[in-house]
Image 1 (cartoon, helix red, strand yellow):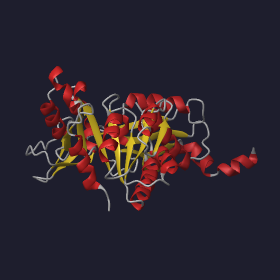
Image 2: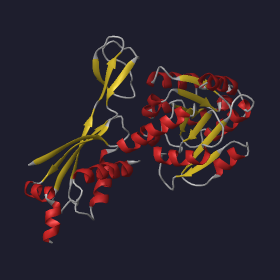
Image 3: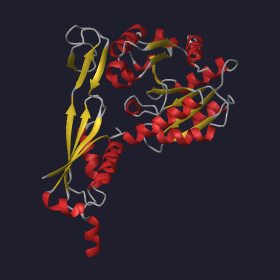
Length: 216
Length: 130
């Protein structure tokens, strides 16, 4: 019996491209966030409100990821910022190579912050490094306060959690305190924000945090 | 959910070690899959079978070893196994922990059938004869 020892990471190819992306982003002094969440949690709305609130302070560019359509990129484009849409044609997550190619289309622009809005999915994007500085997981109150316990890998890999649609709490059984407690039980180092993209509650706190992360 | 992508990456790595596989050449491929890597092993087996069934690797078995989630406690410094979604040290109860295994996905080894070993090694020679 002959055995070949391999001992190689299954996602080594993605990881290598992610490291190249990370070097590219660092070279351009970008602060890059990989926004992950389930579908409909408000990722694009958060990007829109963030652009609106910070337009006089710093410049943002956006890479949008969706299974189909360029609807999100069209929404963001209305704010006049560099944006490129990745359509994954069915794939449930973004990969580093897709981000590298998309970034090539906007890199000539002048910006300090890059949002990569991942495909809405709390499972698969957790395993794929894109070269970002950090992952931000968005969870909305309408999803229920147990989501961190059900999708621990995503919350474990993230650096910040945004509890969105906080304005809807009076109409829901969801407790934002329980949601926060559950998220912190998975990952006690998570930075927690509570926001509403309808009333703009908490948006300025979130924007101020981004400002502290911008590389001078 | 993304087991097909993972199966394709495993196949890509196999081809780097066995570039021109012959039928009944690769017996099995051992992969370790962490319990926190969001991979359903049945689904990974199904996907691997699906993408190899019409090739020389038809019949190659994917041997999946599920690895437990292990942590190192930053408080008591002990190493233990945990069962997500509970992320705390089972010894002292502290929640400042570092995950040391259970998230990995790695191709460990490729096992060849004995008689094919020489064929694979001298693949170019074989082609000349054909």
